[in-house]
Image (cartoon, rainbow, N blue to C red; front, side, top):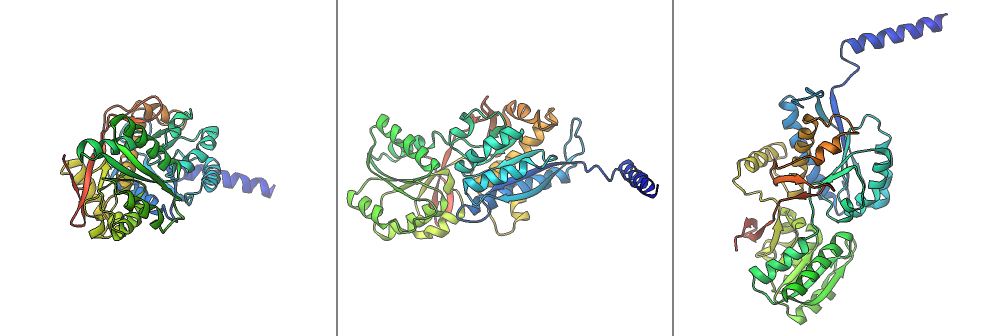
Amino acid sequence: MKRTYIYIAVAFIFLLFSSLGVAQEKVVKIAFAGPMTGDSAIFGRDITTGMEVAIKEINDAGGIQKGSLKGYKFKMVGYFDDKADPKEAANIAQKLCAEKDLFLVTGHVNSSCTLSALPIYAKCGMPVINQYSSHPKVTKSGYPNIVRMIDDENQGALIARVIYEKLKKKTAAVFYENTDYGVLLKDSFVRECEKLGLKAVTIESYIAGQDKDFSVSLTKIKRLNPESLALLSVYNEAGIITRQARAMGVQAPIVTTTSVNTPVYIELAGKEAAEGSILLIMFNPESRDPKVVKFSEAYKKMWPGRTPAESSCYAYDSVYILKDAIERGGTTKETIIKYLLATKDFPAITGRLTFNERGEPFGKFPSTLTVKDGKFVEIVF
């Protein structure tokens, strides 16, 4: 009999707290999965800091403004470190699928990690917003539970066009990281070279996260004396390669990727070696666009001493796009992707955004930055 009274008492207390609004937390729970340690950790840091700025702004303004989740606020339940390792990404996906009250996952970063985790998320019905994986397979493998903020399939071709049409160069050396990302860019670059008549005098590769001495390939590049160097890399190795190339006397203009759009590239390369490097971008931190200025000021206030990277901006936009989709009716895990896919002409800070039926953004066009006196500045050809 005593045990029965205890059960009744516990049930009564639960109901009492529920009636007072304590038991139900009015939050939309999201999680980030990506590299927080290792060579790719800066992307995890930049993405999560960008998300935190958006979450704070939205929550300070009262959270979701319309629909059945009006008044709900965003809650980041954790940053899950996949260490840029596809096996670890799969393990994290399994853990996050077990979180029944988790609304959505953002991530992963490295395309190989995203591709490893996606089938697991798809099987458990977990919606995903991906902020920085660029391989075509991410959205062309048929998984119905993902949209992404970036699509780099044509970035290699655009780099070739900058070299041939803007810089008026006839030859190029190609130096790419041997990953899904690097191979994608290399193949796109080479195809465009064949169309344009731009001659690739050599195609060199390196193992991302392992190689630190690039002298063998750079010696070959110096001997061939190309008019340009297409550096298809991310910021960390790109910075080291740029420093080593200039130290060895390779003077060809370096044209590189949107993934180099972080001040850390200049720090790693050194101010003098980085001078004149050209990179494609989807976000210019020095833009005077009011939306960009507002974001940059909020970011620097929240994270003193840091400058927002391009990935920070995609992350910031992703939270606002999620908020917009929820307010239009995507209030459950089962419906949110439908409303995300219906996003049309959203005024993101990285450009007005529309998703196609595969969850790929389109309608945004890159511009270019160059390094001048240790800073990125916009270049208009």
